[in-house]
Length: 178
Ligand code: 5GP
Ligand code: MG
Picture 1 (cartoon, rainbow, N blue to C red):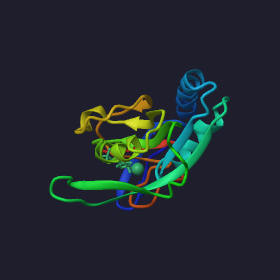
Picture 2 (cartoon, rainbow, N blue to C red):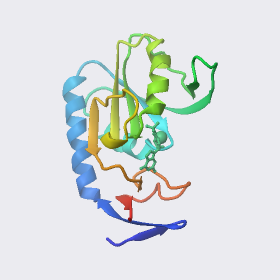
Picture 3 (tube, protein in one colour):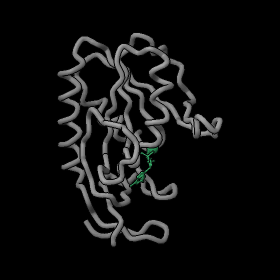
Picture 4 (tube, rainbow, N blue to C red):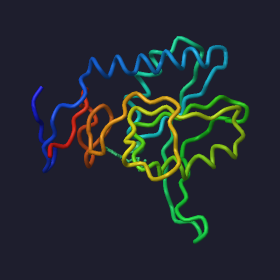
């Protein structure tokens, strides 16, 4: 694999297709074990998680459902700050075992602001599965329950993640070249 150019930036190969597949399988095995007989509902956060969610879901051998939501953030009152809410959420979450599926937890801001809305719907349990985390970038108390890769604090593209709209269809993960 060689470097690629997207818009104005150069990216270099970072995690191969084979390594990604292996990592996703491992997380799927944990979910198969933890959720057998519970019919979890996976909630993919659009757009970034759609590839990871599709691959993860196909590795599940247990009874499971999937749905997708888009998060929109708007300005709340001065006491609530920015509020993140979802569109497209039609499923009943009460008493369901929910697994949020994210592409990446960077600062943790998005999920930190959105978790209360999900908690308010009284799920039986609520966990987070993310393809990537950047531990050195984390600023909010968000903890992934399932995490395929921990990566350094650098910008990545591919496998559903974009740089200004492009790069989501690249099957491997690329990282910004210094
Ligand atoms: P957070 O709210 O955790 O700071 O940000 C999460 C969102 O920022 C992700 O869902 C993703 O859309 C975007 N993001 C954070 N880091 C990266 C990155 O390295 N590459 C890409 N393509 N998006 C990122
Ligand atoms: Mg995202």
